[in-house]
Image 1: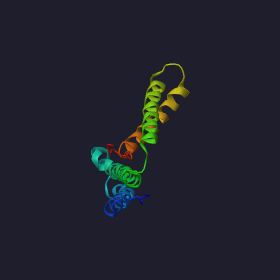
Image 2: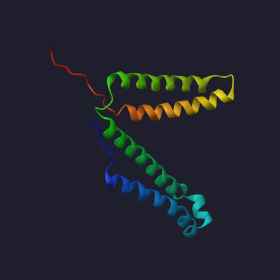
Image 3: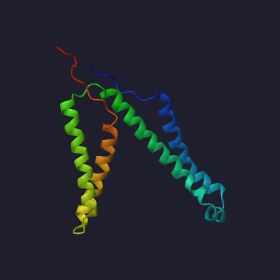
Image 4: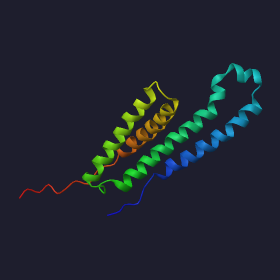
Length: 137
């Protein structure tokens, strides 16, 4: 049974609203505040960043929710576990790549592998695999 991905509509509204507010806040703040006020008040400069960052976090939460609602109880255990192990191996390889002292290219690749594997693991950990029948005979 395939389920439709679901993300709460209010969450999507908050994402769009915060993103628009963050993009609009920067020119608004710079037009209303003096350069001295901007230099003295770090939080005033941080408002656009915070709004956009929160909208990115909420987008990731919506992605997790939509993925989990679509895949919960649809992925067999024999598929779920190898994907989970591959993501964990990616995290380990990414850490090894980032902490090796030999080549910058391994550091850069390690960072990307670690980032993708960690984000993938966070999403995958919210998926519930399909269980086999547990009836006793």
